[in-house]
Length: 276
Image 1 (tube, rainbow, N blue to C red):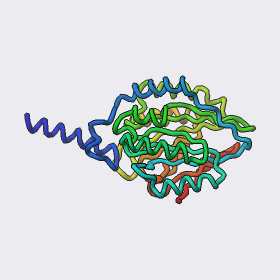
Image 2: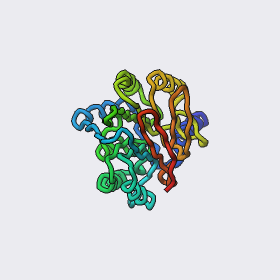
Image 3: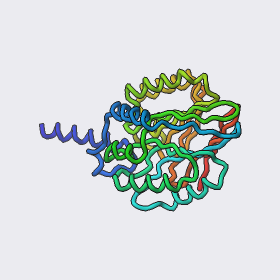
């Protein structure tokens, strides 16, 4: 019996460790897994603090997307450089696609203060697995909802941004159904972008990804609804591919000086990988 219990504990530990390439053993027993509960709290937050439409004067625009900042008790040089450069470029907004800080509440508070006060452009935030190590409430208190939509309005038409929370490597039932409802409105928009932290498939390292059945369902859902681009982070490895007519972009980590520059026009969406 002792050997059985030991084996089961070892398997559980390995499963948790495989969910992130930079896991701290002290974090393992604090990671909340109730994604449906987090979704409901995001919906409640959205009712109180809805996201404003972002108005852009030109039909063509650019935005920057980054992930895996891993901010702790001080601002890393790569974050300082990113914030400085973003203000000088032609970008209209920024998406921080998960792993913004490194788990602890003090880190979350510090990251929130830095990004909210120093980001030179409007910004959207998505939760990653590192952000939830010490609790969902810490993330929500500092960055708000992690499941929501935003609209970018241009003279030529509107573009839809869908933010999804996948810190537990799943959308859960409630969030998946919500996503289906949002995509029913796809025909009203010029482009549709989906942002979520966790990868839909393994990318060079054996970190946590969606289960195959859920990933396949999402591939079909995104294809059937003509999603323009799906953005992920998490693996710290740049990747760009097209599946069933949909672009899938994984940006490398800002920790490694990597980000994506997304150029949007009437007819296409072109993503360039940029190194600071």
